[in-house]
Image 1 (tube, helix red, strand yellow):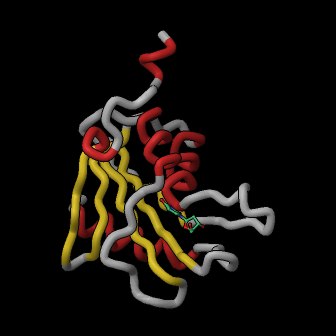
Image 2: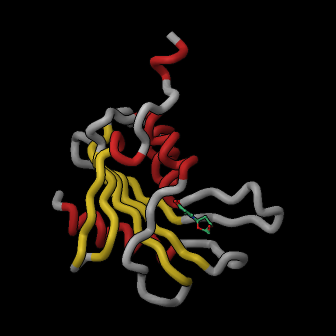
Amino acid sequence: MTDKELLLLAIKARESSYSPYSGFAVGAALLTRDGKVYTGANIENAAYTPTICAERVAFFKAVNSGERDFVKIAVVGGKRGEAISSLCAPCGVCRQVMAEFCRDDFIIVAGTPDDIKTYTLKQILPDYFGPKDLK
Ligand code: THU
């Protein structure tokens, strides 16, 4: 699956965002090593802190379905009802969740279909605390 195809799936997933408080809708599409895609959109809550990001919805759906081997995730976001913004970078908590299940070479695909930006997990979260630290 190309980066662009995955980004387009994230744009589609964004339609499921429940974001009445921030008005900011995010979509994510996570690709497994064997070619399956798990999507997510952010889900907000009136008490605010239970809110969950699109990336973590995608990861938790996948992990709870038994997946453990991931290649890349596409993330897009922007004001609800408007086009996606030029870049929606994953928040720190989502980066930490990626670090739990992915290696340094895991790819984050962001930007827009016409201007795709890619990063490795190592680039956006160097020297992280992870499973290795508890061994
Ligand atoms: N959000 C995400 O879904 N992913 C991110 O990486 C950043 C933020 C959501 C959370 C909240 O519903 C809204 O965007 C505004 O912060």
